[in-house]
Length: 464
Image (cartoon, rainbow, N blue to C red):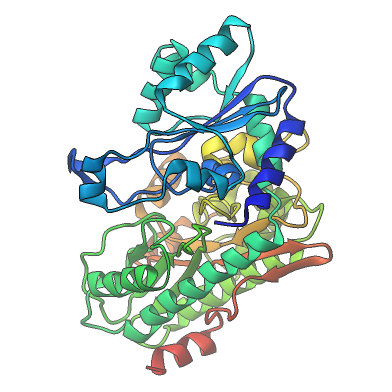
C-alpha cells in the first residue's frame, strides 16, 4: 500500500476523466476450491488496488463524480470472525489509510444505487470476471447477470486504461522488486536443470522462492520440455538428455506488482548445433524487438520486424523459403511464432487485459491484423514513456499446426514442410524480458538481467 495521497490523487484524476455518474469498484471475493471453507489464495482486483489500495475481500469502493463524494461499503467483522481470523483493524481505520473518511455497511449500497438510478444517473463499473461479483452487481442494479456483463462502462474502461498504462515511479520500483524475485526463481532453474531431475521438483523450488521472497507467482508457472505448447502447465516429466526446458515464470511483489520472464535451458548442459542455431535466432529476434521499442513506435510494427528476423533465420536453416517480405506480409512466420511479441505489465501480469484487449492494445489508429498468429498480438498500438512491456519472441515446432498447414497448403510457397516436419520433437524456445519505455528508448527492468546468450546460459548452469 502506498501513502494516502497517492490514492486520493488517482481518484481525483479519474473523476476528471468521467463526464458524470457513479463509479463502482467491487473488491474481489473469496473463491472456494472444493468446499466453502477451503478457499484459493485471495488476490485482490487490480483496479480496486490501484484506486483504493486495500487488500481485503467483499468491500466496494464508491465515487460520486459530480459531488466528489468517496466512500467504502464494508461490513465490520463480528466476534465470530475475529475468533477465526484474529483481530483486524476496523474498516473505518483502514479507509483512512487510503484517504477515505466514510464507511457504510454493505446493505446501504443498495439505497445509494437505487437513488442514483431513480435520478437517471449513470452507474459506471469495469468488466466483472468473478461469478460472485457478477451476481452482486446483478442484485444491486436489478439486472440479469448477462446484462451486467454486457453493460460495463466503456468510458470508465478507457479512463482506467489511460491511467494504468503509464506507470508512476513508485510503480516501477515495485515492478523492479518483482523482477528481483523473478530473477532468483529463474536462476534456481538454471542451477537445478539436469538429466534425471523432475520438472515438478524445479517447479516446486521456484514456487517456494516466489512465496519466500514475495506474494507468490504472478501467473501459473510454465515449466516444460514440451515448450512448443505455449502455455504448458504440466510438470510431470523427468528431465531428459538432449531436450530443451522452457521456463516462463514471474513473481508478485508484496504490493502485487508483477514480473514475467522466460528462459530456455538445455537439459544436457550444452546445445546441439541446431538448438544453438535456433537459440541464437531467438536471441537476435529479441534484441531487435528491444532495440526498436521506443516512444511513438507501434508494437505491431515491432512484432512484424521481429517476424522478419525469424523468417530470415529460418530461411538460412532451410525451413522457410521465398521472399522474406512477402512471407511476412502473408503471415508465414506465424507457423513458428503463433502468438504475439509481448504485452503490458503492471499489477496484472497481462496488465489490464480483463478490461478488454482491444481497448488496452489497440485504438482508432492501430487495428488488429486478422491473420493467424498476428491476431494474437495483445498490444499493437504506439508505445509511450512509462509503459512496461514484455518482449518475448520464440520459435516453436508444433506438430498439429505443421500438419494442418501442410495438409491445407497454407503458405506453401514460404514453408519447406519436409524440413519443418523433421524438426517435430524439437520443442520450443522463448526468451522474455520486461522493459520500461523511457523518453529516449527503453531499459530492461531488474537489478540483473537473466542469462541470455549461450555462453551466459551454460555458465549459469555450471555455477551451482
